[in-house]
Length: 412
Image 1: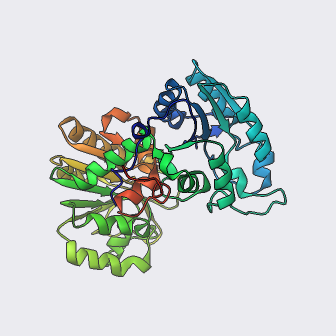
Image 2: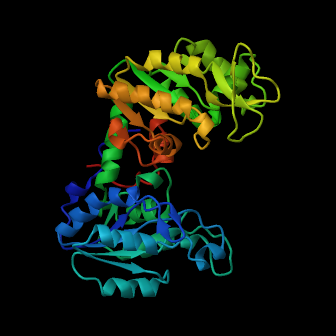
Image 3: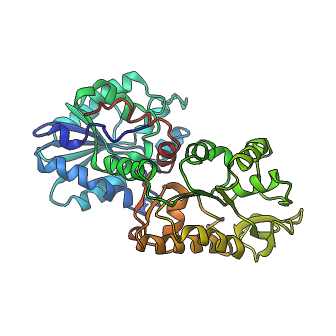
């Protein structure tokens, strides 16, 4: 799927208008305080551009999932802290927050907006539960009436939330379907699409993908899309156990998917020369941060142990493939990085990718767990060519599937 020709913010020349901007303010909040404001800062370029052009900005975002009315009444998932932080970051402009989700209240809030100001509406997913505590998913299932209400608030729509680009919600696809000719993507989404598309469609070779994480089934479409494009695909993390078990190796009680064995065997038979699979692991008796024992796949992992990270043989094997790469896509960590005993594999691979990047390699970290893991391990964003802000959306684009939240936005 090619999204590089979608209408962008600069194509619309928006001035002196009221503009809806779908942002991704799904940030971690603990005890009412924002732990990481990276996603808020990522939206500033688009918002500042609109404000400088004398527009009023109505910002929309979700925050986490809403499972019941208690999630709303407790205020644990309100966007109020985001509004406060946004006001601090946009100190030259007025930022207000509308805490009500009643349509008339929202319209009244908009009537009081000044030129060159921002109004952040409450969590879009509050509409997923009604006052009777019934899960109705008006936002998440793209309810046409909710989309129609949102669209009635403005004359133009900018989708700058890459994190939800793979899902058709009322606050993205729904609005864009109504405000079609005055809909576009924002600067963040434009950059995400261009940077990911560059790695997928214009790779400089050697071209290597690193695929980790727990499940092969989650990455099946990615593997299928990349296997004919990449020179090598490194299979690591929990995924590797399914491939090794399918080859008859003993993996103990490590995570695996027996229903994927046939697919794994087929891939190894047809593309064995391209697949580079983990061959040793740090193992422990339970899923916990315990002192590990090293076992190679040839030795076999004892039945009462499970692998939670890769070992030195795998690290050396991966490094030999990565050191000469000119394009690297990485999605999914090599181990359970939440546990200090099982961070070494991901850290070592990240160091190799960082070095390759400094030597001219184009490196894309595909969001989600891999992005958070390498930042957690002390690496910086500029150690790599690009770190995506959207895990599921990045994966969707890499696997060649449609970005349903962006599809209704017209091409240039």
